[in-house]
Length: 260
Ligand code: NAD
Image (cartoon, rainbow, N blue to C red):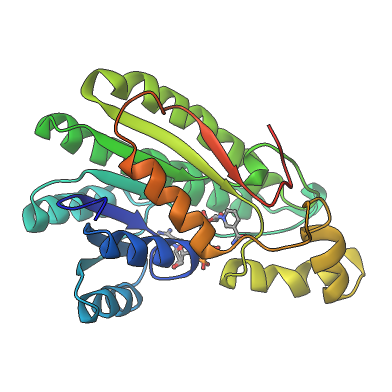
């Protein structure tokens, strides 16, 4: 029970990586908040955790909305008494060459990945400072926080940006024992990636099997996908770490796709 009596808000936790972290954290004793766009999808994950004996609540939250983020975090504090851990994880992918990228899609990508990270960080840091018990902020970056790929200009720019935000949060948070770190997974088979495989095949004029082998997993050391459980275990280790010795860092979990 490494997270006993901790309260964790996880954005984008109705699906994929966020959902796995929520289940893992609940198993380790945390009260988990499933913050996602639609309340019904968030509630389904929260109910599943409660059926397994965990403590969970669902919050409808569009991370790009200042009002919804602030109200959502206030609702969590009212229900669970505070916030100890934030996992800023909500994200989408839109692929396109730069020359065809619409400005609306560019702004949408930056709003979800960067505005969302900023708004949730601000709301949670305020509560962590008020409570005086420290805290852990974890951003879901990507290998694309360190590497670039064609067709992903907005995603790569946003994921690089998270490194900067995490480093500032680490510096500002240290005096209140708030740590901030970034997890950088390789490709994980979630709906976000499953959607991309046919899109990349069409954009690059290759088969879906070639997208997996020659685009997604080409640079890994063993040709394997990272799993949601690999990422959840990393998120558990980062959240449970006892001191500000580990802050302002990014941790690659990518089968060696990127080494630093
Ligand atoms: P996913 O599509 O399975 O889940 C993403 C969740 O985010 C969904 O539940 C969706 O409803 C939610 N969401 C989207 N927009 C939102 C908004 N505005 N407000 C609140 N919630 C919103 O995707 P995933 O693969 O689990 O991705 C989670 C995070 O991990 C993303 O930040 C993604 O960039 C990152 N990531 C994924 C991979 C991968 O290969 N799957 C690799 C590296 C990083």
